[in-house]
Image (tube, rainbow, N blue to C red; front, side, top):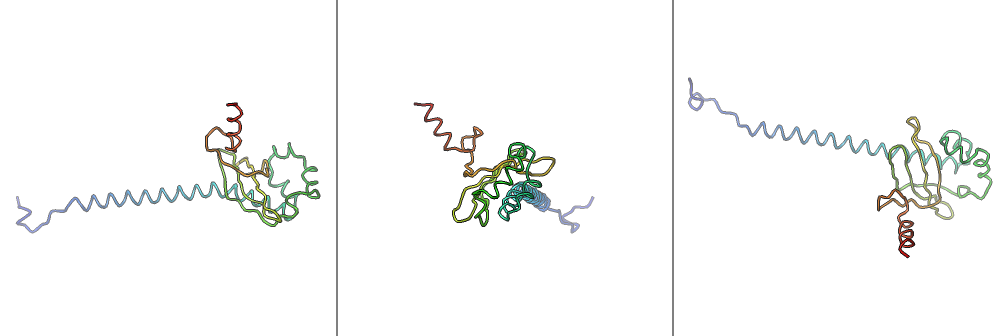
Length: 171
């Protein structure tokens, strides 16, 4: 049997294999992280794009297209088509609006709340409620109130209203 020291062969260090293994784990973590970020961005982008498209279509005056192609059955049940189309001629906040921008959102299961500002002569808060129906986000409601996300996890959106309710209950 030959002695590795005397035969000229070098013994390979396990450090190289350890470093390669750690590098592989780091690379796998980076790939998983990137996929997670991409998935989260897509989750947020889809309902926000539908909300923006819906409001932009109304601002452009095409109430029919907005109602017919971007609203859910529940919206159409609570807001008849004729009533929605009539709001075009009323003193609607959309009449003088120039743009809409969305800056907050809350998505749970198949429901999304997208909040932002309707920009016109006066800036108005706007929240668009959407539901995912058969893989498509559709508008199911509008509110001219600011979207305040729930900090106390009781399911309500407006934390200020919760504080008022608690104060009344204590009196």
